[in-house]
Length: 279
Ligand code: FE2
Image (cartoon, rainbow, N blue to C red; front, side, top):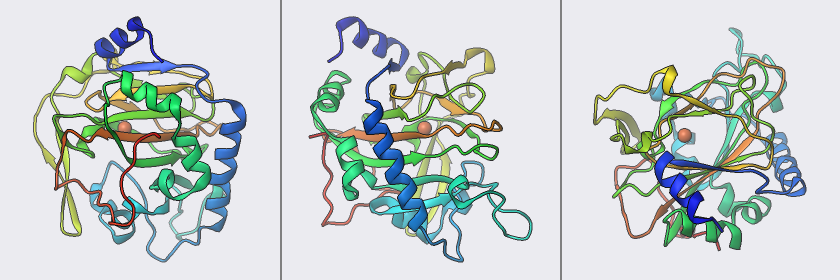
């Protein structure tokens, strides 16, 4: 799947960009299915807002239950002071998570296959286990910022094996909130871990190394169909989307079954939904 030079680049930089990985028809089918899921979504009185600014607000029942279900989360700025949506429901959703890849047939097809299995092997995942999937909307105007973080904070294993697969479903630019990464930053320590204790979650500081400065950040501007893979320790962020264009993306996170899954991770799997790899 990958050339030796591509693998060497991934090991050096902590990420790899693969343009044209997914054909337009598969992307269109995924986006259409996401639209249907949002259409059918009836928000409860308890609104789930995903934000990395205020982790306490994510410690609700719907968030924890979404680990092995399909649930829609609103943007932090979706509601006005009166509690009314500022935009249409379809343009107010932050993401759908976190078991789309195992529960929805369209997402299941998109998330599995020999190309992805071969790619995962090349990236060092010998026995991949797909823990989570997210359809990220980054809607126009209110698409929220995601501050510097490392994905291993949320999917901790020892050794660290979590690997992110980030599919651009629309063109991602600096204007609509593309990813920014710190090349080589995967060699820095894990700074924080997101810990679950019963039905409560909290962020624990593990290492006080500073986050990269703006000079160290590289924008990953990519066209729809591109797949970006990155190491679980690679620092990355995305800016708010204040543009008129959405920036849809779909992500998968896999760990290697040979690494030890931290019991304190927030995600739990029910027994009737075993973890699978890419095939
Ligand atoms: Fe991330």
